[in-house]
Amino acid sequence: MDNEAITVGIIANPASGQDIRRLISAASGYTIAEKTNIVRRLCLGMRVLGIDRVYMIPDHSGIAGSLLRSRDQGTAVLGEDWPEIELLDMPVEEKGIDTIRAVELIIAAGVRLIVVLGGDGTHRLVANNCENIPLIALSTGTNNTFPHFQEATIAGIAAGLVARGAVSISEATRRNKVLRIEINGHCKDLALVDLCLTDEMWVGSRAIWKTEKVKEIFVTFAKADAIGWSSVAGLANPIPRDSSQGLHLILCPPGQGKLTLYSPIAPGLVLPVGIAEFHILNPLEIITVKMFQGVVALDGEREFTFCQNDEIKVWLDLNGPLTVDVPQVLQLAAERGILNWKSPYISQESVFSVTPKKSKSAI
Image (cartoon, rainbow, N blue to C red; front, side, top):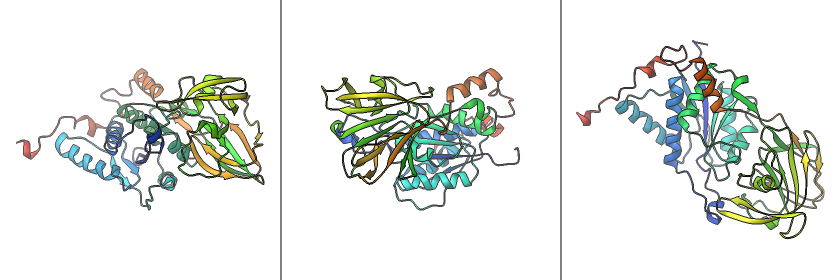
């Protein structure tokens, strides 16, 4: 292991947190500069643990270029020690396909872990293509139910600990539930948090926020303090993230059905939602969709249409992606003294480069 380069992939979606929900709600966003700073802190945290190389998308929106400038300045002026930044050799279309291509190339490069910056939609694309590579899920999107709000420096240290094997994958990660959807006998896609069926017949702006258009909701887990479509389930019947069950809801107009709830569909957007019925989803229990036609939305975004000739099935699968439990990793590191000064896992180059250098302009 000592002679083998230890590598990590970073998927930083420049478009996350910039969908149409910004126009119809009170959501705030992450700028390119802030995302660059997050990746910088990730890299500095990882390098302390001796991570040699980081693979990234060569995006046109400024994250990659800004990061390289930040690295050069930090190295020259502050004496920062960075892992090597390698931009993937791939076309960039500034679409979801960029994330899919990047994940494929990162896995082929032999990374031990992938850090994802984005919302539920970005994480869904990564999870659908990352095989068994562990993920660190960081929130920079509009709906952030699946990823976590976590200081990037701490996430970088955790990434280094797991990638180096200082904390084993079995101790550091947990397996997540997913919803899988099959159309006409072919497994089409997955959702990490929620799958919604609407009676619209176009994909359009992708994001969904009109409650009267949503007819059914499936969720893997549902917290009472969630935001997005899973909040409806969370307020009706909370489902823990670590349980082996999900929930299926049939919606109706507000004031009808079993109950009506005011749910936070998007930041600052609280709307009444009627629930006709709901029931617990057990693992591998297949639900056949009875709607005549409509659109399937996965983790808050419209993905594809269906019509009366399509047979659609949805089920809960417990064998979803692995995610790193960052607090657990740091707790184990503390108990075992892994971050002590003379620990074999600490990069000595990082230890001895913590004194800022003086730039020529400062002399």
